[in-house]
Image (cartoon, rainbow, N blue to C red):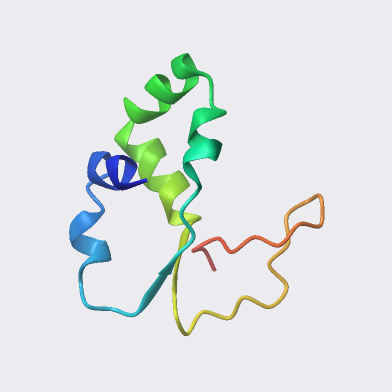
Length: 79
């Protein structure tokens, strides 16, 4: 996840001093991504930033009702 944060130029934002919660995927989750897909994603900083944005919220975020289409809980950093 740290490599993804660096590639998306999010390190500064994440170390801003704001109280944040980061839902970092496990190494196993990254390992399950086919290498060609991972390379393609990592080569697109805007896409990486968008994806990473779904894994970071402020500690005061209202997470109520944040479900994906399959009913699993998710916490996108989006209004």
